[in-house]
Amino acid sequence: MLNQQLNKSRLNDLLQPGMGPILFALEENEGCSVKTLAERTQRSTPTLSNTLKRMKAKGLIQTKSDKEDKRAVCISITAKSKKLLPRLHAMHENMLNIALSKVKTKKFKLLKEQLGQMSEAMRESAQS
Image (cartoon, rainbow, N blue to C red; front, side):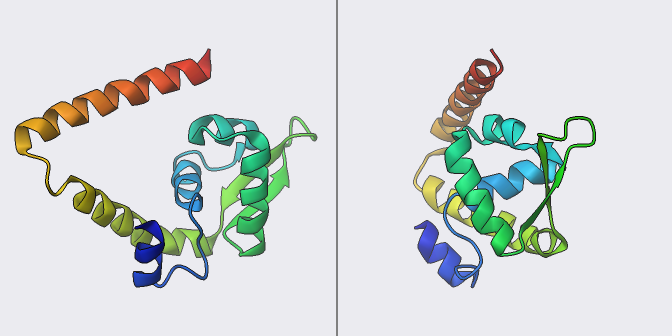
């Protein structure tokens, strides 16, 4: 479904599965470290590093050394990514609507509450 949406949105030549959540996390945490981004996206550092290399090659992110810790790398989205984000958010919203189209209102509220609890538990686990 994701590949279909990427094709439909004409983003398939620029984005690959897994890149969207990274861009969303960077949108909220501009200039964060690879370690922080790995925690936010719940990806292993090696997996994230490979995806970041592809994203940098496509001009979606930029990296620079941390001013305080020269060993750390800070990651930011580029103007190209900022321009893509509204389309990416719309695509995400569309996929969510498709996925939830058969869920009844009462069940949706319960599902949303449970997913929120799961998300919170995962965030707490990542921080400890």
